[in-house]
Image (cartoon, rainbow over all chains, first blue to last red; front, side):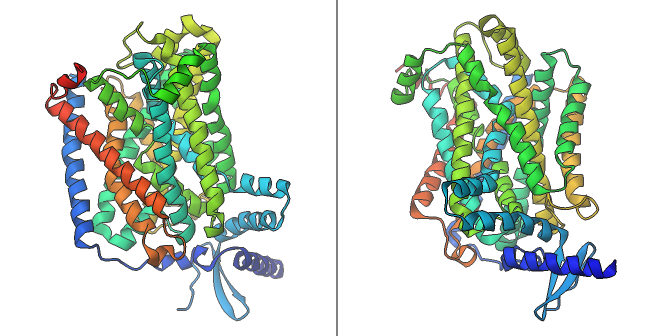
Amino acid sequence: MKHEEEHTSFAEASLVLETLEHDQLVAAKREPVARRQLQGGELALLWGLRLYLVFMMAVVFWQAWLAVK
Amino acid sequence: MKAEPQAGQKLVVLADEEVVVTHEDIDRAHDRARVSAARSGHTLRSRAWLLWLLIGPGILVMLGENDGPSMLSYAATGAKFGVGFFLPFVVLTFGMAFVVQEMTVRLGAATHRGHAELIFERFGPFWGWFSMIDLGIGNFLTLITEFIAIRAGLGFFGVPPWAAILLALGVLYSALLSHRYWTWERVTLAAAAFNLIFIPVALMAHPHWGAVGHALVRWKPLPPFSNDTLMIVLSDIGATVTPWMLFFQQSATVDKGMTTKDIRFGRIDTLLGAALAAAAALGTILATAPLFGHISAGNFEAAQFAQALQPLIGRFGASLFALGMVEAGIVASITISTSSAYAFGEVAQRPHSLNLPVNQGKSFYAVLGLCAAAAAGIVLIPDLPLVFVVLVVNVVAVLAMPPALVFLYLLVNDREIMGEVPSPRWANVLATLVVVLLTGAGILYGISVVAPNAFAWLGRL
């Protein structure tokens, strides 16, 4: 029984290595992707859109509240 | 670094190399082996088989986004404005959806990482949490509206709300029973195909094909410029492009095991999904267009549209319409709760795959099941002003898209992670246009709310 299980493991592992790219393996994905520093322009754009979203969400909820009332 | 197997994993030594193999890897390898075998053939039949194996995430995301609030938005569009400007406009919005979703295929195939995971690891948890909050709020509100649509659609047949919700949850949980991505994908695709039920309903409404052709080519007649029109514009955009779609398709692409060799087929899959979803959306507009000028469909629910259509298309046609709403809600509740579970697993670094057995993916299945159950439970609470959620959900989606798209744009142009397949120039230009259009539409909407008469002069032109 144990021998059969080992055989299956070996066959399955061979199939995994033949068909999957190395970074598709679950074990490989535990390695984090390297951090990237955002540039000034990118940060300004992200902050601008963040403020836009917060303001607009307040507008949406205010309007919906009025509609429901 | 020496590999250490964890629970449910096997350490195998192959050619002096220690490899940790998981159940998830093995299931994915079986799927990929079939793709490799199909790719080795050069006949038309083998290419068709390869396409069949590789389609899935694109069609699912597009038909999944034809959800309860989206179909209600299209139904309201037809009833309020008839056949005209909104037909080509909806086709345009699906074009926008194709542009951004194609980027997620590219990103998932090149990095083998989910969208939430990449934002967290590449830009840090500060920006990652912002994205997750946007996604979490949007997904939960949308899930509530899916169950509202299911309740309303089955209500047309006299099914009590509790039974409708239990039935929907039963279908959702049944789709997960196989613990195989492939089976889940095929079951959900089969359910999603019923979205096309709106096309025969449109035919029963006997549309004037000359007017349809004229509208599609000339974008006319134009609707009057009013706050109502602006709300429908925003709602129809929100019906096709939303943040959950980005997270879902990228994670599904990774879970399916697609690689850079599959990007072309992923693009076809996404294009096919956009075409099918656009056909269903146009079908819904055409189905309710006969109501134009006869009723005020401001806050109609699914059952009310079906009832209003019954004198025009008969009981059978109205029943198909109501069933379409139920299907839209069920498929979207499956895909949206799955997108939440993928994102949670990626951020919490917990196993996240539809290939996981329950004992290895407890947190993944728990998040998926609990999100759906919580949203379903809220719909059953009596006297909650849920129309509030229906009103805002598509608009919230439009407003949350520009920040999400900027992250997508940065990631898909990041050569360190994309290698040889960064986004092409044409896609970047189109994606930038989509961001500008969405932000502009959001700003116009904001002005119309804060200063309701700001655009009155445009209505007089």
